Image (tube, rainbow, N blue to C red; front, side):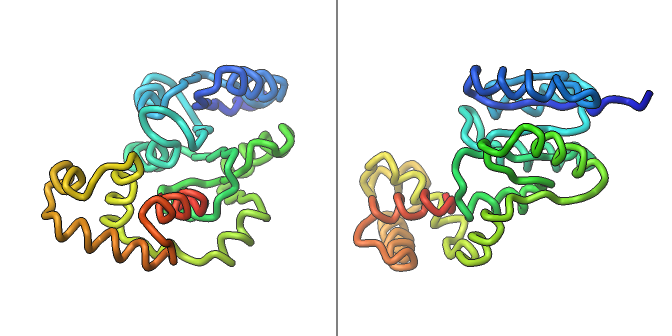
Length: 204
C-alpha cells in the first residue's frame, strides 16, 4: 500500500477547519496530521510533524496564510503549499504565487476538487482556480510599492500622518508623499478609500 499524503491544515474558524479535516479524512490516501488556528503557529507545526502538503487559509490571526507560506517556502522548499481563501481577490493570487504557493483555491470548491489539488501538487503541477487566474490577468500587477503598502496598512486604523511617521520612523513629509502617491495610483479620493480599494483587490 502506498504512503498516505500527510497534510497540515491551518484555518482559524474551528467549524470550517473540522469540516475540512473530516472531508479530507474520507479520502483513502490523505491523512491530516496537524491542525492549527493561527498563522504564526504554522511553522512550528510543520517542524513538529512529517508534512507533505500545508493547506493554508489566507485570513488568520498572527500571520496571513501568504506570510506563513513564504516562511515555509524558505525553510522547507520541498513542502507543497495550497492556499485556500474565501476572498477571490486577484492580488491575493499574485501574492500567493510570489510566496511559493503551488495551488490557490476558493473555499467553496467541492471537497473532491481540493483532494485532487493536493494530489496534483505532489506530482509537480500547479493548481489555480480558473476564474481567479483570469481575473488576476485582467487586473494586472499590484501598482503599490512595498513601502506604500506598509504605510496604507498602518493608516487603515485612522492614524494621523504624525502617528504614522513616529510608528514607521519616517519624516512627516515622507509619509504624506507616500500616501499621496498611493492615493493617486489607486484613483482614490482619500486614504480611507485607497485602503478599501487596495484591500478589495488583495494588494495589501
